[in-house]
Picture 1 (cartoon, rainbow, N blue to C red):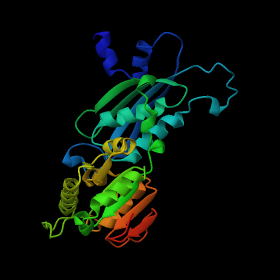
Picture 2: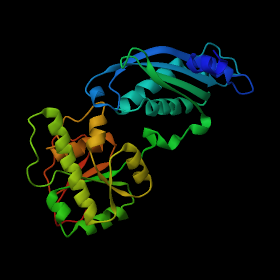
Picture 3: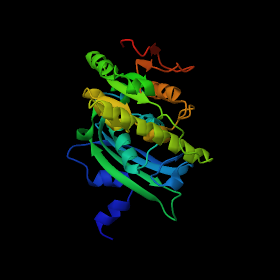
Picture 4: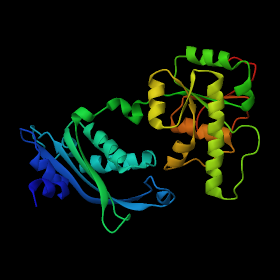
Length: 305
């Protein structure tokens, strides 16, 4: 077996040693860390957990000053397991590649970290382990993507009457003038949605009905852009775009999903507002929900925002 093939299947610590840059580096490692989690792009992987194995090696700058047996002077193993736990809790993911990237990036935010080797394997999808492995250096770190740095948006729920109102453009003018990120939410259109009698499929149909109405709102004003992912929303909030939330992906991928059903669209929007740390939620033309988890303000149909 060639050395390249052997290293491809060796533990990340061997790859780290074989590809080490010039100059001494220390390494810390996490081996065979197994977690049960819901992950995967296939429908069979939804609604069930599977075992995921993590092997991580972090190359760190040697500590030049005396350590004095002080844990605060080194990169703790806990930082590695915390990075894994944080990214698993953030949202349900389809791809191991996405999870590996996020874990590596979070680890590399630690000042001592130089390179991160992250191997993740699914243990229950076949007779062997199926996985990915990535190597990332500090040049891949993008601190602006951290959740702690995400802007706090102003979220506005629009009833169907508000979507159709002649005041819509004026409301958007006022929201733009506020110089805060704006996300608009809507409910389902008027009229009954198809009924399946099956909880999971009905939930998807009801979420898709809300998304249909999001596109109706987008047709009313070109400033309204329908978005469905966290990445799109983060970009929009940083670049002054007015977003209209299409809820299916974020709701279905949430690790700790909303208790509100899609039919209770104002409460669902309030859950979303709390999830994205909105500093305020305006509700135009609808009743306020109970226990929203975010500051709420009702706006009359004829009022200014």
